[in-house]
Image (cartoon, rainbow over all chains, first blue to last red; front, side, top):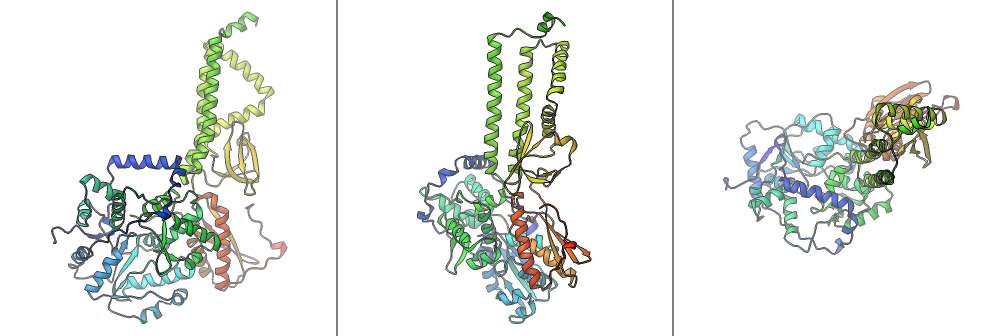
Length: 326
Length: 272
């Protein structure tokens, strides 16, 4: 199995996004130009009626083996390792499985009260353990001044090793934001290497080498996104969702907040975007939901759909937003 | 100078020449008019640098088309020798210099503005106390729209003698400054860090740019200036409102008291 496993956990600095072939770059540029001039044509589709296929989840075991392979030789492991996870890459699920196999305890996130008082002691005392996994690092806090205090109190303690030995799974968008918000760069950061045509084949995607290369480039090396794009390609009746033509500043604020926090409940969105009136926020959310750009999960958390992620990222990039590195 | 000599400067104007001049004029006008319509429309669909580049192309294209049309038409009318050119253009220049001095000065300043770039469409400028976004750069004047949605026409002539304040200078970065006036009894470092976080947690803030807080002690209290950049210069007023509203909430919760200024100590800030 070791020979055919194309999963790789690498230091973050070694991550390289797969390049798209020249023909794909030209096609993409042409598609951008067309979108500028015939944006109205896309609105004719009724995405609400589209039944998007649930993209098949990949096997976790080979990825867990890659984590073991990357960390097993380290005789003097650092206190805390950070695994940077692009949205839909499945890194959280992989590390949860890895933690289960290696007896790492999953930490519960701090309560709202602990966050607002920046009380890391009370939070830690309730669950003290030797080896732990914090997999909800992106979703437990909000981009508010009081929660920022908690993060500033927590990060130095993590790095000093005061909280024992652990692994933090952090979304790539949160990581990019924290890099800006906190002056010290985080050490011992890892991520999964970009999906290659070989990894796509290993995950069950069938196609020519060129097609797989295109898919890897289009998904920016993100296996979860690649699987979703591939699922859409299998059915000619379906197309990827598009942002509504009315998408403006408020839309961008919502989409960025959802990416930064790995999804948010409606009331939390209102807290991080207080300048949007509640009815304005509702209209925006419903419109994005109708266009299948976001979805409401069983826990009443709004999330960006995997099918819309590539377009959402391009939308934010065109507006000059601070993006993740993936 | 007798009539024969003057007529000798010009070429014979035939019907074909008239048609050619008409065609050059029509094509030049069509290019300029369509660039003035298409590029701003395109810019509305773009953001950041791409938007500003599309807008900046409008006056550049007009000047290039104007020069090409001029160089095309003049040899059709005037016998193209150095002596003739100097005579005709010199006489024309003298007449214009007396009759239409300011108008021509504005036209020339308009051409200079295309190269010196003191303002471009999409820039936020202040000229003689009037602040607004440059919406259009014409041959003689620029149109700026103030935050109160009033269009102000500023002749290019101002370029020669007036200070022009450009807030974003052709880029998407425009610094906003928000003032807070606090009672002197407080922890200044805590307030400074809090105000930095207020900017950092604003959805409008451009994270790629620095955030700065400056404090100055005054007889009535402490004056804080929070400096940060919005993602888009067009969001500057919403950004400043957001910083003010959330900044006040956070300072009250700290708690910090606000300074009570008597009218004689009221601080004169910038116009916006």
